[in-house]
Image (tube, rainbow, N blue to C red; front, side, top):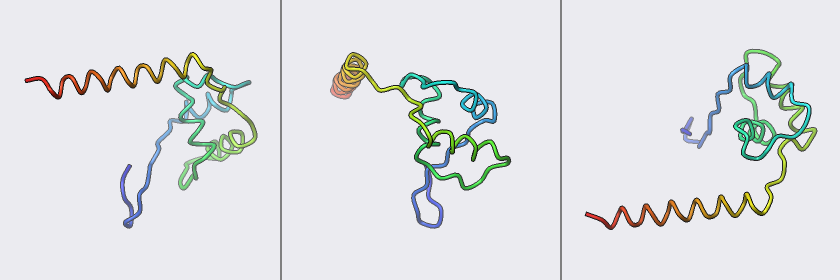
Length: 97
């Protein structure tokens, strides 16, 4: 994240190997998969610079389908629990000497 010309910008750099792996997908990936955030960026983001046509091809693929599986209730609960646990531990550490 940075600013360019006084505007907030979130720059994402993606390797060609990751782009190719996502292009080769035959079906949706789990929401916790390492590629899930990259696929979300391609679904929602704007490509401003690319060295080849793979990025545009992946973005078209990402926008055509639902490539990330929905999060089930158990996964949602575990994430909520972990966040709250981390917050509780952080508060405890802040208050310690």
